[in-house]
Amino acid sequence: MDSAFDLPEDTRALREVAQDFARDVLAPKALDWDAERHFPVEEMRQAAALGMAALYVREESGGAGLTRLDAAVVFEALATGCPTTSAFLSIHNMVAWMIDRWGSEAQRAEHLPSLVTMERLASYCLTEPGSGSDAAALRTRAARDNEGYVLNGSKAFISGAGSSDLYLTMARTGGEGPDGVSALLVPKETPGLSFGANEKKMGWNAQPTRTMAFQDARVRAEALLGEEGQGFRMAMAGLDGGRLNIAACSLGGAQRALDIALDYTRERRAFGKAVSDFQATQFRLADMATELEAARSLLWRACSKLDGKAPDAGPFCAMAKRFATDTGHRVADEALQLLGGYGYLHDYGVEKLVRDLRVHRILEGTNEIMRVIVARHLLGRR
Image (cartoon, rainbow, N blue to C red):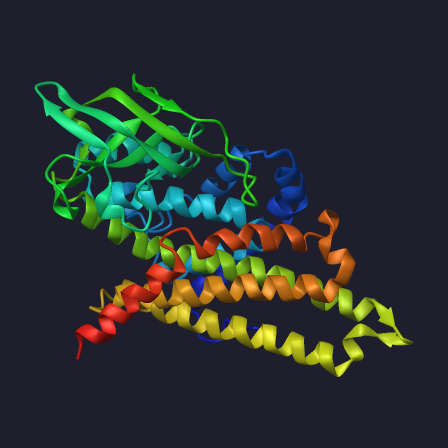
C-alpha cells in the first residue's frame, strides 16, 4: 500500500534511499545485534555518510537542512530494518540540532563536524532516578565557579551512555522549577563522570542504556549551551521533534511486522487453504493496515505543524506520539499472534519488534504525559 501520494518528490527519493539502507545494511544483521547486544556504530556511520546523522541541522552548519516531515519519513524507513538503530539515530539528530539551534558559533564549529559524520556520538541526558515524567524536578546540579561548572548528581536510562562521546546534560544552575535548569555539553572524558553497567532490557538491545554519575565533574564555562535558565525550554523543544521521530520509528517497526504477517499468512496453510483466505485473517490484516495509515497521517500533520511553527505544534506532536506508538506496538503484537507459535521465535523477527516497540510508549514522555499535554491544550482554549 503506497502512502506517499502526497509527499514531495524529493522526500520520496529520500525515503527510497533510507529503505534501501534499511534492507541492505540494517535488516540482515538486526537479529544478531539484538541477541549479542551489539551497538552498530560502523553501520550508523554509513548512515551518516548519507546525511542521516544531521537531517535537520542547517546546511550552513554541515547538515542536510531537511524538514521534520523528511526526518520522520527517513526514521520510519530505517526502522523497517531495525527500530533500535533508527531510534538512536533520532537521539543523535536531536542533540546535533539543539547545538545548531542554540549553540554559539564556536560550539557549532567545535562539535558539529564530528557529529554530522558520527565520528563522535551524542546522547541526550534529562531523566534522573527520581525525576522521569516530572523532568522539571531534576536534582543534578551544576555549580558555577571561576573556571566553569562543577556537576554533581546522576542520570538514568541514558541511551548510548558509555559509548557516546558527548552528553547534552540538563542540570540545575538556579532555583527550583524549570527556570533553574540549564543545558551543558559534557564530553565523555570529563573527570568525575562515570557510567553504570549496561542495563538488561526487554528490548532495544542493540543500543546501550546506562546510568550516569557526576561527582565533582568539572566542565569549562564554554560548555553552557545558550544561557543559564534556558535548559528546560530547550529540552522541551528537543522533545517535540523527538516525539515525532520515535512515532516514526514505531510505524516503521510495525510496518515491518505487518509485512512479515502478510507473507506468512499467504504461505501458511490450515484446513486445506492459505491462512490469508480466512475472513477473520483478512479483517485483522485490514485493521492493522488501516490503523497504521491513520497514525501515519496524524504524524505527518504534526510534522507540518512543527515545520510551520504553528502555536499548537506541541499538542499535535504529543497526539502523534501517543497514537503512533500505541498503534505501532499493537500492530506488531497482532502480527505476532497471526504467526502463532512461530511469531514467538526469535528467528522470525516479530518478537524482537514487539519488544523494541514497547518502550516507545514510555520514552520521550510517557503516553500518559502525552494525554496530559493534549488535555491541557484543550482545556486552556475554553
